[in-house]
Image 1: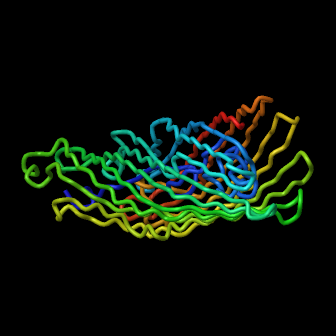
Image 2 (image 1 turned 135 degrees about the horizontal axis):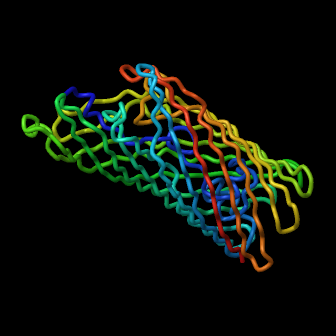
Image 3 (image 1 turned 180 degrees about the vertical axis):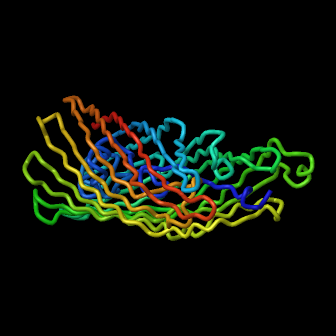
Amino acid sequence: MTRPLLALTLLAAPALASGFRLETHHARAAGMGIAVTALTDDASAIVYNPAGLAGRKGLDVQAGLSLVVPSIVFTSDATGASTQTLTRVSTPLNVNASFGITEDLAVGLGVFNPFGAGATWPSTWEGRGRALASNVQTFAFNPTVAYRIHPRFRVGAGVQVLRGTVGIERGVSFVDSEGKVSLGGDAWGLGWNAGVQGTLVDDRLSYGFTWRSSVPLTFSGRAHFDGVPPEFQGRLTDQPITASVTMPDVATVGLGFIATPRLKVGLDVNFVTWSSFRQLFIDFASADLDNPLPKRWRDTLSVHLGAEYDVTSRLQARLGFVYDQTATPTDTLTPDLPDAQRVRFCAGAGYRFAFGLSLDAGYQFVLLLPQASTAPGFSGTYSGGAQVVGLNAGYRW
């Protein structure tokens, strides 16, 4: 058995954006391709641009979830065989509530999943020594305050308390037999977010800028070994582990165009500092099991274009498109963290009732463009995609 067979990973499978970032925190935004930085004005602004909370008195509550069904295919250069991940459904949630104390001052609290990923590969596939199953979740608790300084300019800021959990399983080869190793851990982290929103041309053109800070997380947990032959049991014992990962900074600049009284168009550009993820290092209690894995991720850009059309005064229709760069160099692309350039095709609808209730639905088809990997010992091509359905209900009073 070699050390690389013991190198564990914290995350796996595609999220909806590059790396393992999630963006579908409200069905309206999902239907518009997340191009809402300059246009958001309900409680979901806690996530997309906190400045959007200011300018309206009263209570606004938005709650919902997304149904995410990913599928990844790996085609091996060595064997030509293709392996697909097993079907699984994840359900990122979002709950956001805001209260306009005055026309200018508002406060809010959001709970959502900013990062997450998961995958289950077949138990007999050729890459089981690198990845079998994983599940990662993060929950952000985001108290926020916003203020309208001028009728044409608003600011907002918040604190993000991040809770992360991880569960990983992979195969371990002992030449004449195989076993498994599993790990679980959790972590807390602290960061912030801030944004501005303003008007360039009355009733025509608005802008927005927001920054969500990086959050360092140090996971602590335990490693558990199964099926270990007697000759290895003195070395491969259940033991504590730790690992550190920094969730990246995310900066977004956006423009909002009111093309006609019924049609709004949004354009956003995101910048994500994935370059902070240089390597993955699991610290075992037994130091001889430690094995840093180089990742050398790159900062990424994504472009979001979306539109919302008022079919009637109560019914809205939405469309969107996203192009997202991959953060992963080809020589460090492995099944523990599969990634690829991706495009997203988005559509949605919303309905506003007379008594303050709103219902929104959004759909995204995520297409992972074929991405070649030259990783030593496991080269091949990753492809696939995901189906995403977002549902939200809200009440504004």
